[in-house]
Image 1 (tube, one colour):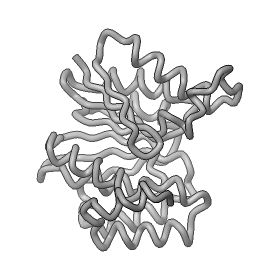
Image 2 (cartoon, one colour):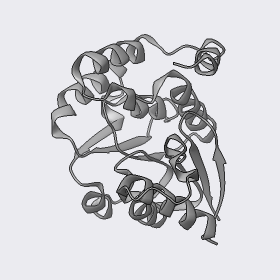
Image 3 (cartoon, rainbow, N blue to C red):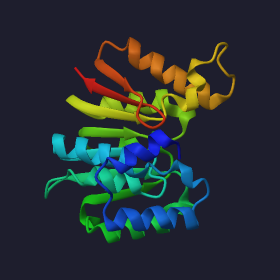
Image 4 (tube, rainbow, N blue to C red):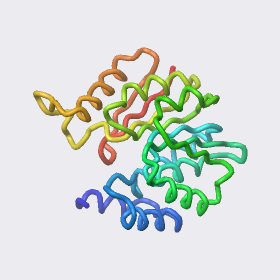
Length: 209
């Protein structure tokens, strides 16, 4: 953790006990625990969700469920969050986290390919969080926009990709290419307005017009 990251975290309201538990379990039980959203981004997600008070949320890329729990904090009594994870080895930990959160009745976990699953989810979403396979970001964006209400918000994580999107020539690796293509697509899309924030590894905020 950098000095800036440490300062940000020390001046951000702390996570609750369930999120602290999940962070510990992620480091114990998951490969690449650095993929966890963490306290600062997690608080941003919970605050945005609480401000919007969404009735329907879609998350693409659950990992161990930390960001899903944060997003779910803004749900009203009749709200529902759909979260999709492609790695079935994480299912038990995600479900345990959901159970501990007390929002089991409002959180639907899907295991599989998001691009195949989303067209079959019969919902119009108020808030979407994209944090899945970086190679598929542009494709996730298209299916998300189609399911998003006018005025709804899409948040996409890792859009700076450790600064690789700034390199010239652009790295040929597919993850960097995928993020760069996504950023360019959003910037050129007349259906939305967008703001790229230097939060964590870059967060794109998009509002459907």
